Image 1 (cartoon, chains in turn brown, yellow):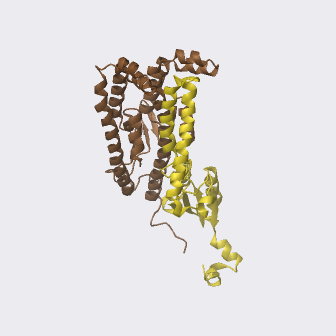
Image 2 (spheres, chains in turn purple, green):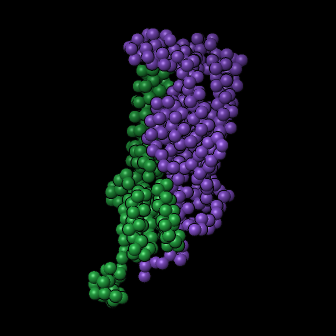
Image 3 (tube, helix red, strand yellow):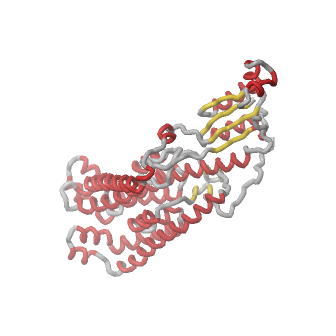
Length: 259
Length: 180
């Protein structure tokens, strides 16, 4: 039984994705303004969402570091609730200005990257390049399969980061799970939820640490959105890979056609 | 004779094909044709089979995050606290974003408003690949069993010999049925 493909792995010049034990990374069509928005919402998320992890983690680390040191979240809180004098006092001007260029860069760069990758995604589709849909190493096993997008979103609702684990996006998953624990603990999220559920709103407000709690919404909603979108694209990648494989291997000229 | 089967993209498709090869069907005697599908209408949620890339999730996620952030912030000066207002913001914003996306998409797609009939009929189980296997009549049961065991959506056969015998025998089927 001949097991070789006709052209073992053809056209690897414009790949659509790569399956590696550490992560399954791929490109697909994105809305540039949505990607830019995620960077505006949380510095570096555009890059994480697009799979550009090293750049994304540099920006995310900077965001957390500068934000906490400059007490930016408290400044936002006081400004938006009309306590401007308090906002001026709390912000550390030794750090604040550094935030601006990083912030602008990450929005601009994220949008630019999305636009560029869209072009290469179209090119990869047209070239119909091959890929190896399974990868195993001493540390992990990664493969393409069919995943239910709503399950990814539901897992991320329960614990941000689990939805990405479901589609083998380990860097996003690891970062989100860890960062969620840190901000939930530092912001006293679970105590706040508990007291809110008991109806003790005053106590819930007193126990929180707004400086950290304000990080939460972006992280939470992003992880739901991104794990869903990622699962959809992951399924599409599976379909395309299998379509290419069977077209290459099971459309022999020697097939005895019905006459 | 020919055996036809329909599948969706999954590991079972490859399991079925390799199983058939292992049981003696030559690779040249297996023909697989992937089908394209008509997807024009934007769908609320992408399913495991279909995705149009512009799901109605974008606007919901963006506005959900904006309003949740505002809910948490203003929750600190409102009575119910940041958690309650954060959740109200999340659901309110997501709902608003969904509505905006939905109606904007409606307006933009007015020209191709109706879902085509073939789209309405396709449910959760979608044919994505049609498989044709050329085999000897005595292999039919084996082939059929392999296909069904690997989650084929439908299996059929084309057996001209049997049809021709029923219609008066031998090689005369072409003459008695010139349209074929």
